[in-house]
Image 1 (cartoon, rainbow, N blue to C red):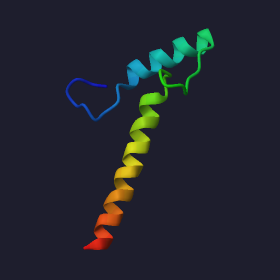
Image 2 (tube, one colour; image 1 turned 90 degrees about the horizontal axis):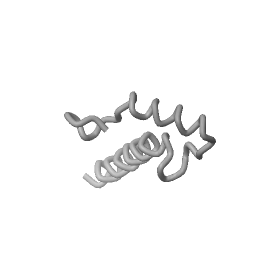
Image 3 (tube, rainbow, N blue to C red; image 1 turned 120 degrees about the horizontal axis):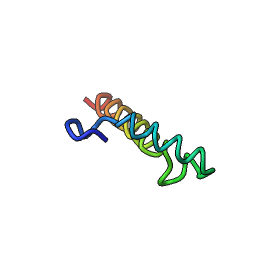
Image 4 (cartoon, rainbow, N blue to C red; image 1 turned 120 degrees about the vertical axis):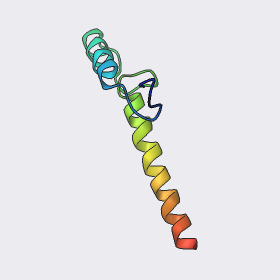
Length: 59
């Protein structure tokens, strides 16, 4: 993640990790995989939207 914006992904670092893990045959989707931060951000964003939708319905 970038230092100046904790909610954003560092795509350059992710790209380098992706290349390294792909070359060595390591899993890209495991807990320490290159796509883990992207998946985590996506899921958190989806859950946040779902929660906001439910809270808006209650008002």
